[in-house]
Image 1 (tube, protein in one colour):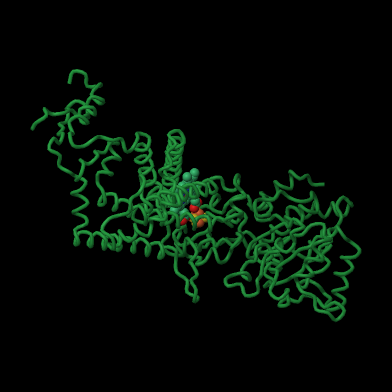
Image 2 (cartoon, rainbow over the protein chains, first blue to last red):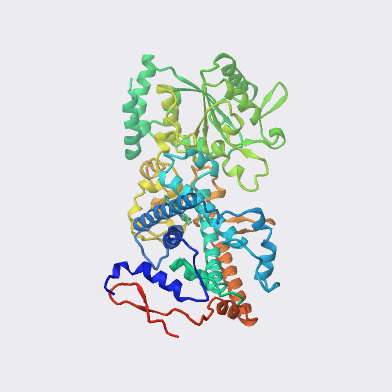
Length: 217
Length: 374
Ligand code: HEM
Ligand code: SF4
C-alpha cells in the first residue's frame, strides 16, 4: 500500500509462496502476450473492414474511404505485432510455433480425441499438433494476405511480378476473400477450444503464469 | 511536326472533348505530305474474333476512318476494309512480308486458337494450302516492326478463351514470346486507343507500357479513380439495382479493378459510357475477362464446380462459416453430454488448501494478497 508502484513483483513472489501445492511457472512471456492480444484486436478490425470492402452493407452506410483507411492502418499494426513476435522468437530461440514431423505424427490421435474416440489427448510440446497447424497456417496466410494487400495498395507501382503471378486484381481479391473466410472459420474453433479444453491456458495468456498442478492429482 | 509532349496533351484533351482524331489528324496529314512521317504500312490479321474491333475502329468520327486511311496510314491488308479478295488480297500480304520487313506494323485482332495446332482457325489460302491463324501471326509477327494486339481476345484470350475454352485460345503474347506485343485491350478496344497507339508508333516509336503490356497513355489509371460516381462510393452511397444513379459497386461494378480511361474518354463519339447509363463496368480491358469478371452483377467471380455448376463466392463463404458453426455447436453439445467439458473445466481449477485469494487495491489496478487464511 505504501509503495504501490513496487507492488507487482512482491505480489508475484507472494503468490508463488502462498500456493503450497502448486508452483508458479511462466508460461507466456510478456512479448507473446502483447503480440497475442494486439494481433487479435488488429486482425478483428482487418477482417471486419475487409468484409465491408468486399460487400458494403447497405444498412451501415459507412464512409468507404475511412473503412479502407482503417483496414490499412490495422494491417500495418498487425504486421508490426507479427514482427515483434518473430523478433521475440529469434531472440528467445523459441520454436514452439513451428510444427515438426513428430508433432504431426500425433495428429491422428489428437483428432481421435476431438472426435470423442479417445479419452485424452496425446502428449505434446507447448502446443499440440492441431494448434500448431492452425497457428502456422495463420502466420503464412496472414503474410500472403498482407503481401497481396500491398500489391493492391501500390496499384502496380511495385510488386508487379506478384501481380503477374496471381493473374490480375480480381484473382487477388478472390484470394484475400478466401483467406478471410479461412480466418473466420478457424478463429471460432480456436476460441471454442481454448475456452473448453484447458481454461488455465487462457488465463495464462493474460497473466503469463500458470500454476503447476499439485502432484498426483 | 507535332512534338511528343503536344501529342500527349492531345490524348487527354481529345479524351475530354471527344475529338482526339479530329485534333490530331490535320497536323499528321501535313507531316505526311511534308514527308516528315512516312505513311505507316499496316496489316491486320483477324483470327478468332467477332470483328468487333474493326467496327469500333470504324466509329472514328471527323475525320472518319476513311480520311485516316487515305491521308495518314498505308492500310494494306484488312479483311473488313479491303476491296479485293482471295489470291490477290493474299498477294498484298505476301508482298508486305517480303518487301517491307521490319517496317510494317502487324495488328492482330482475335485470339490465337491453339487446339490441334490451330486447325480450327484457317485464315489464308497459300498455294492450295490452308494456313492457320497461329502460323500466320507467328510468321508475320517475327518480321514486323511492331506487333499490336487489339481487343480483349488478341491481348488476353478474351471471350474466346472463356471457360471451358474448348479451342485452347490464348493471347498473342503467349504464342510470340520473342517479341514484345503491345496490348490494346478492351471488348472492343476504343477507336482512340487503337489509333492513338498506332499514331504514337508512327511518330515516336513504342509508347510506355504498363504491367500487362498496355500503353500507359490510355491504361494507366483505374476506371474507379476517375469515375464521376466516386463520391458516392467514398461516402458509401450505393445503387441496389442496375439503372440507379448511385455508385454501382454493389451491383458488381469492376471499375476498381479495371484499368482504362473510359470515364473521361467515353464511347460513341463521347456520347456516353456504361456507368453513365447506370450499368456497372464489366472490366473488359483486364486479363481474365470475361470469366474473372462474371457474373457482371456480382463483386467476385463464381466458382466452377465439376459437373458444370457454378456457385457464387459469397455462398461458399457463408456455407463454410455455417458448417463451422454447426460443427462447433455439435461438439459443444457432445462434450457437455459426455462430461468432457465439465471434466476439463474442473481439472483446470484445482482447489489447493492454500489457495491464494487476492483483493483489488483500489487506487491502482494491481493485486495485493489478503492475509493468508487457513
Ligand atoms: C490478414 C490480413 C488481411 C486480410 C484477411 C485482408 C482481407 C481483405 C479483404 C477481404 C478485402 C476485400 C477484397 C474484396 O474486394 O473482396 C481486402 C481489401 C483490401 N486490402 Fe486487405 N486484408 C489483409 C491485409 C491487408 C494489408 C496488410 C493491406 C495493406 C498494406 C491490405 C490492403 C487492402 C486494400 C488496399 C484493399 C482494397 C482492394 C480493393 O480495392 O478491392 N490488406 N482485404
Ligand atoms: S460506379 Fe464503379 S467505377 Fe464508379 S465509383 Fe462506383 S465502383 Fe467505382
